[in-house]
Image 1 (cartoon, rainbow, N blue to C red):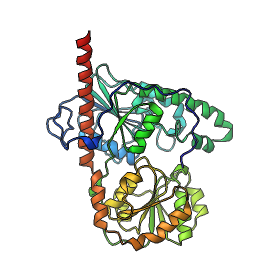
Image 2 (spheres, one colour; image 1 turned 90 degrees about the horizontal axis):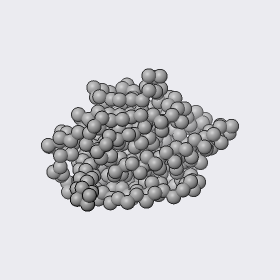
Image 3 (spheres, rainbow, N blue to C red; image 1 turned 60 degrees about the vertical axis):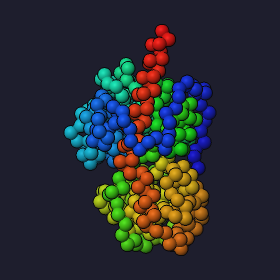
Image 4 (cartoon, helix red, strand yellow; image 1 turned 135 degrees about the vertical axis):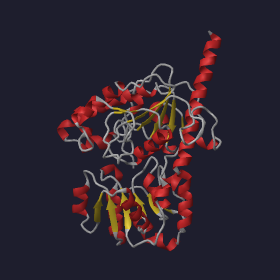
Length: 414
């Protein structure tokens, strides 16, 4: 269940614009000058890329890596960068960072600098270019775009702690700091709303993301599902253990999956780490906690799992697609991205959000369905990197065409 959200300080502005058409209405190829390098021929646009921070390789960073690989000549603007933490995926690229980079801020402590990020994002100033393509779940969409450039934002979600996870953020903060944090989140939300009005076109990662963009920003968005590196995975003979792959933070609801496994008397392993790790180990000593896993190890763990459990409401949920690419069924909360990525009865089962008994029932039932691994792999291919790159290129091209039409119309009326 999503956290309760206080009413916005004022209604979001209803920007008068025409939404870019959803990706599923587009042809499979695009014939514009904004096709990505080495993905579609004829790329010639001057593009700059932006992402919130590049410190680890999770779902958003993998999506951005696919964007960066498509636009290989484009410089990258980000608040913080860790080449080792991102497994060298951006090595050799021209990367501009914020002044915090010089202080050695990394994944372990970047959250404590929250009050600075809105100011620092505004100091990221790409040079003259035709397109700025930002990848954002927090601050990157607030960078300053050069005059004349079209700003397209691939938005994973409006900043969750200022909007739909605000109450969660306050509960997790020390009691003495909650009033200050509440004020800071209100300030960030106001900044976020103002930044959204300067974006020319939003692209959402799912229907849930699209609805959040509409509700928070008053903007329409196309939907382009994130890329999944499906070629990294392959089916093999599965084992007996269920698998959770997640950051160990409260809003990921890993405790729901582990409680369900306990009630179903099912063996389960957890890949990931985070601030909830110690509490979960203490509460569920029977669970196998594996910590973080590299790409190769994770592919093996997926393929060897009895099923993969996703208990949180995800905007998209790359884990669910990676599991299917490895031929394994998914047991997921029946909300958000899972409704778009899991085929109930064919590639997995959907359970009731926050209901451990519902998840336990799905765990007991999953083997009786005799699901076909090939069907899971086939379903995952809908979200391949190549398909994603084509669709993002199409959205960038459409946004620029719209800007050019608007400019011609403006010149004709003057």
